Amino acid sequence: MPESSGTGPAIPGSTKTAGNLSRTSRELNHVPDSIRARKVEAEVMTLLHARGYLVSRVSTSSGPRLIAAIRGNSVLFVMGIRSRHGITGAQHVGEKYPVEVALLRWAALGDTFTKQLWIWVAHEGWRMFEILPGGTVEVRNG
Image (cartoon, rainbow, N blue to C red; front, side):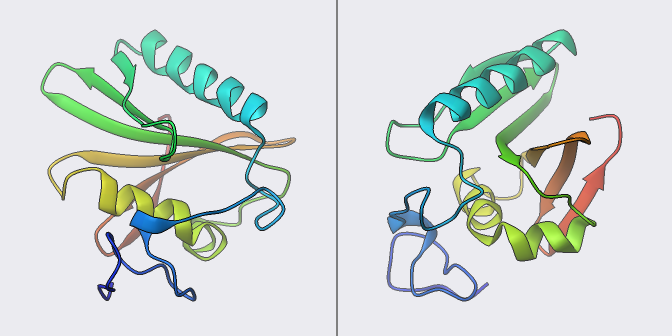
């Protein structure tokens, strides 16, 4: 991904960078309001805790809502979001959520940690995608 003069990588199809994003839910209708975002975040944290992870929110108030999950030697960074529309596959995630994918690639300290985007899809439930340096892969059974 090409670097830009901002504080993070360039967002595909945008003049913004991951480090200087300013969005409202009107600009991107899939971004939940703060109340829904907290509920999604709480559910992600509950699911991770139930799977044996020690979980903590690591975001700043103005940054993305990232969750760090640690189990043994495994460190996982997760961003949880909601969508009213279905996801057809991993490539669709990169096309539909380029900002979130770029933020995960940029924010989670390089390639040493696992980074995932969890999407709550209405009428489907959770879909989980691992964000890799060169693409996105759907994760089965979290």
